[in-house]
Length: 96
Image (cartoon, rainbow, N blue to C red; front, side, top):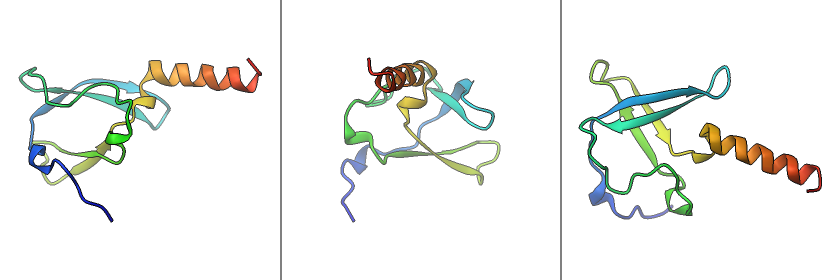
């Protein structure tokens, strides 16, 4: 059990899917962009600290508001980062 801090910062935001990339046959990464293209406080493409671990976003559509999905930030699924992690893993396995 724990205490969630900074809950006063939680609020609904309007986003659109601005990019969708296939990772595998059944996995995709999505990029959400704020509907008015305004910056969103504390939202970035890469989180290097553990402060974002376990945080998620509840996403629903205006068209189908009863259908909801939870998304988490998973920077390692971004294609360019995943590629670098695979290279690093291969280097380690090959003793480099």
